[in-house]
Image (cartoon, rainbow, N blue to C red; front, side, top):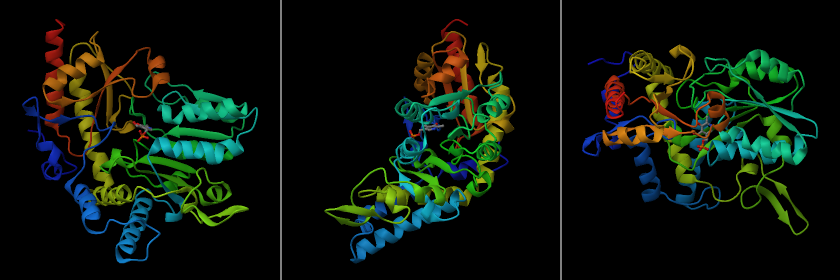
Length: 413
Ligand SMILES: Cc1ncc(COP(=O)(O)O)c(C=O)c1O
């Protein structure tokens, strides 16, 4: 049995109770981590601990439980902001997830700053959450969304990007890692070029923050969006990093409790950062769980997380490409891609394939992965996608390969 050189997978797996469960009587092989990841005991325990010991609202009550909840909530903000290299916790706004983060930028920044005739530059490999908000802004403001195209191997056409930014766009919004192709974009360079052209930059970190070391101070981005549930944390919580100078110039996007300094019948003034953007009772449990997940990942070490996924990817690319009828999308080199592997198997519809694999306890995703412009570019209606995380082993890849071969048998290939 092959063993990971980067980390002790058996030890990691022992932290995830769900991995003990059987699906259709088979060992669960969970390969749908780009959709959402499993949670370690420490995150589950953190949620139970909050609800069973110090459940109270944050930033409101002076009683002991209230103070404890506030301290844990703000402690989580510090942990998560350190995790992604933000220079200060006040630049980290808790939101529902990546989609909520891009929409916050849409309402609080873009609607004010994008003008008629402006362009917004994004790419053909984006998730809908980094496309649709900009389409909506463009429609409202009379601006245009430009999509940078892709090379055959699924990397960005940087010459097209450079052409697009010659028009001095208002915003450049690019993913750090594609949720379909796995392509890792050089977002540090993209942000530098965007800034030189006078644009504001936004990086979608939904598939990068969970899987590789991320240091926002080195990326130089103005906004960075990510989701806790894709990095072992709870659902319904994520974060938007925003550069302080930009956040300070933005008006709140939702009004309500906690986001104000003073309210009078004549009007209101806004709270300090980041609270100006956190109206109403926050997802306190979620944020504390998010902090716990970030700590868990930091203890493993993000370098090791990345190295392990590259090992798995190399193994998967080599072995799965031997299966008859396989078309694998994205860069060939594992170093250039995240732990996401999209493919099609002959004429088997991805949904049929996912159902066949499920019978064998293997969970993959099938569909358009909320990236329909990319599906159009690939000229397919859908793909199958296996996506890895720290608890996946070489055995999981072998099980997937056997499942694909079985599907071939069933379809007479
Ligand atoms: C690259 C990318 N961006 C954004 C999102 C949206 O994340 P969420 O559904 O957590 O808002 C996803 C989710 O799959 C993603 O993969």
